[in-house]
Structure formats: structure tokens, C-alpha cells
Image (cartoon, rainbow, N blue to C red; front, side, top):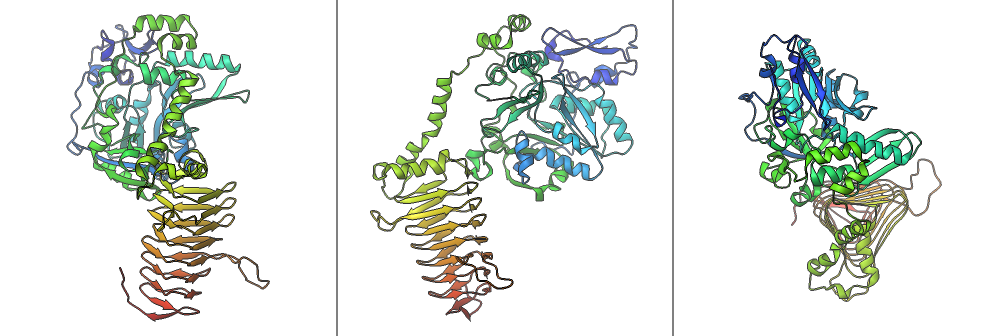
Length: 606
């Protein structure tokens, strides 16, 4: 018969209730809002099944096929909507969609209308939007273990995600391995009191004078790193505050006083793990590989078994991913191995106050809250890092004093303030003097790599370098790109310019009206013109004012050459000085003349 004397020895997984065929175990809330099992001695037969199913009491031996050290990946979904709606990078949703395609069942936590969280499982993919994303309070799992067992016995494919203790409880409940079961847990910092969360929600509903209809625990309104609590109300109003300002997040992340007692000595940390896959936010990825962080969410994916690896392999075409070491992942994600530190706050007094006081008064008493001034200063401190960058990173002895106010304004606009610039890492843009950038409505500059603009051979030159991105256009830089002084890039309305690296020398013109894609390691000489757009329309049938240009990798375009619309240039090709290219150029060929013709083939250059 299971008996809870020390509350730190019960994780609230509910498995003991499901395993009891006599229905002798029910769950009751304590004054902190956490549930604990209670056994009816009149119904109990002392079979011991509850104790043999308890993950706190039983040491579950990992199967030989579970990895001692996981394979570690950073990943995010290519589906922008899924990524932005997810806690991290949307990998759980991509795995779940794969299961749905196989007519399988997906299980996880959903938020209920009474502001509680419970576990569910279904083949209906319409539920995925509810299962997706973290819920920062304990989920009730009563009945889920029996439901999963029933599905497995019917040979249904099941993908279930829960806390590490719930996953261990599931395997103990099943008492055998099922090939048609794939389990997923997450790096858990600790589960919070439903009672405290209800107090928090009562505060918000009173403030907004309406019932909450939708809650997003980690909304990305201010980015992934600065995640927010967003609550929508029946009267159409909306609450949204970031992690530094929201009173629930402040209490959870700063103090931890309302986390379940068992979480301070969690038995389910480290490796090997019971689950096939472990997911988390990949905090610190910006310091390991900035290209994997656009502040939209990046998942830490830890593969713990061949079964988990097989499922992950099945979604690789739908995601961006890179593999890293376990040590790299652990560096800024200590919750992988370490339990939450026990707070100094007196829990008994705290929960007495929760019963008596509105939540905001409890927060004022127990949590250190940033003032508006402190919050603003914190953001300013982060943003003004550009001063140090300018002083330390500019090359060739250039000092910040050489820059005008306009130059500094451009630097700040591209690196910090513009919401039309997507940055894969901090400060990807370096502008030299007299560099002008205009980004019109709906246009976007995507910097996945470093971009140096206005590079000068004569440092004191006053030659302007210009970029114009017209309405709804896009310029994407995927590799280190240098744009020398006097050059002009114009992307016509709704056009897309993609540059994978290399450089353009002085006085180059790129006029992009449809799509221009320039491959890696291209060398583009002085006075070159690349145009996928005619300035005026010729009146005749089948005429197109704009057609794509594709330039392969390691292409050398000589001084004064012109590349016209509709042309594809193969890898390793050479375009002679002054040539006008109107037709496709094969790989490793030299073309010259007006119009350009092939003069040599099978050429390599360096």
C-alpha cells in the first residue's frame, strides 16, 4: 500500500491510481494545490502494484538500446507559423505531424477552460495546436496510462510527451516495451502549483473585467529570448508582458517557492533517460552557432534511443538542424542534470498569504520586481553594446570618431532597432562611412551571416554605397559578403535577392526585379551590372519585364561585364571583362564578347 509521509517522495504522476484495479486510490489536493494519493483500506488488497509502479520508489533499469550519452541537435521547423507558435523551435509539432501521417495517436498536455492542465491523447491533429507549447503548471495524468496501454494493445502507433517522471511512470505501468510506442520528455525545471496559477489568473480576470479565453505561456511577441505571457479575454482585450515583468514568470524563474516539493530533489535528471527523445529550449545556441538563432526559437533535441533517432530522421527534410556535443548543450542548460535550488522563502507563510491576499500583493511581498526604470535601463544596456563593438571590432584602425551621426544611425538601425531586419546573431552588419540603406514598407533584410557594406580601398574616400529595398522586397545574406564602395543594390518591389557569400567590387550595380541568386565564393569585378529587370516595358506578346538570374558558386565576373535577365551561370564559370551575357553559361566555361560566346571549356580557376 502506497503511503506518502514525505511529500518530496511523490511527484504527482497519478500512475498509482491508474494501476489500481480495485479503484482504491484517489487523489486529494493539499493546501499548496498539489495532489497526493490516498488509499481506501477497505478497498485495498495489498497487491503492491501501486508501489511497483511508483517512479519515486522503483529504480527503472534502462534497456540496453538506450544511449548512455545522447546525440544532441539544435533544430527548428522550416514552417514559420509552427515555429513561432511553439515554445522553442517547433520540433515536437513536426514529430507529431509525422505520427499523424501514419494514422498514429499523439498525447500531451492541454490547457483547460478552468485554468488547469491535463494529459490527453488523440488521432485528431486538430488538437496539436492545444498540445503544442509548454504549460508551466502540473498536468493531471489520471487515466492516461490506461488509455495508452489500451491503444498499444490494439497495435496503434503512439507518440506521447510528458514530464520525465510521467514518462518513467508510463514505462513502469506498462511493464514491457512496445515497438509501437515512442516517448518524448523535456528538460523540466519543475512543475508549479495549479492553485498559485489560479490565483494569478483571478488577478488578471479581475483587472481586465473578463474571462480569459486563451493563454500562451511563452509567446514570442518580444522574441524567443525575451518570451512573454500572453492572455486573451472574452471582451477582446489582451494582456502581454515579458518574462521580466510578468508576475507569474517572476515568481517561477526568480524564486521557485510554488514549485512542487519533489522537484527540488528530482530523481529523473541526467542520463541515460527513459524517453526516446528529450526536447528543450537550446539556450546559449547564439554563442555556439549564431546561424541557428534568429530569436524565433531553437529546439534542443536529445536523441536517447535508436527508435527516437529513426523518428527524428524522418523529419529532417522539414527542419533546419545541426549536431553538437552534449557538453555544448549542457553549458547553458543546467536543468538537464541539476534540480531546482530550494528557495529560502518559508512555504507555509507563503501559501497562507496565497489563501488570504490577491496575487499581486503576494508578488510584491515575496518577489523582487524590476521597476519600469530598471526594465528600460536593462534594455538600453543590452542595446548599447554596439558602442563597444564599434570601438573593438572595426578593422584597419578605424575608430568610432571617424563616423558621422548618420553612419552610427545606420549601424544601429540595421543591427538593433529595425524590425524589418532579421539577424541570425548579434551585430551581423558593419558599415563603413557613407553607406546608405533604405528599407521600404514590407521589405526585409535577412542577415544569416556577416555583411560588410561600403568597404573602401582608400579609407578617406567619400564615395557613397547604397541599398534600396522597395516595398515587399527581400535581400538575404547567407554567407560572408563584402560590398565595396560606390556599389548600388536595388531590389524592385516584391523582388528577392539571395547572396550566399563572396564580394562585389567598386561601382557594381545589382538591379533585382524578380529573383537574383548569387552562389558562394563569387568574385564580381568593378563596374559590373547584373539586371533581372528592364526599366521600361516593351509592348509585344510574351514579353516579361523581369526574369530570374541564377549565378552558381565560385563564379568570376570580370570588370564591366553585364548579366541580363533570364540567365543561369554554372559553377566555376568565368565572364570576361566587358562581356554582355544574354544566354546561359555552362559550368567551368569562359565566355567573352557582345553578346557573350563560349571561348573555352573545362576551365578551373583560383
